Image (tube, rainbow, N blue to C red; front, side):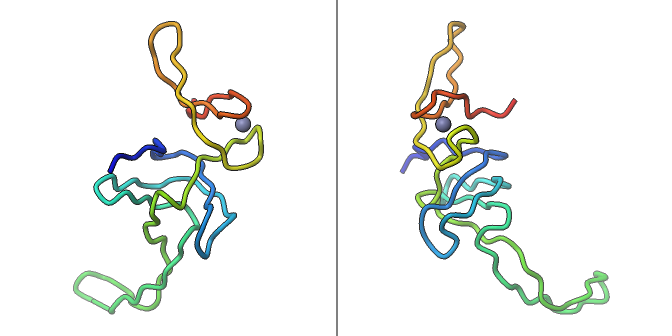
Length: 110
Ligand SMILES: [Zn+2]
């Protein structure tokens, strides 16, 4: 399956389904082969770390983001203040950029 949402690292996305529905966050990592992305402060999971003195690991409970399926995400448009569909726009020099389908504002990070 293709990543048709074109979500990339550092994009701001909105969660459209699941327990974190409505949250927005920055994409920290994309896992294309699994169609998943890790989004800042979204899909927090508790992880138990075993104390390991040889590796100087304290141990305890650590909370961190677990990957979320890309189909649960949509790009966030700061102009519309909501999640939006993406449109690909071709610039005069041939560069393709992602724009908001509603307001036509570029969703590429400068
Ligand atoms: Zn927009």
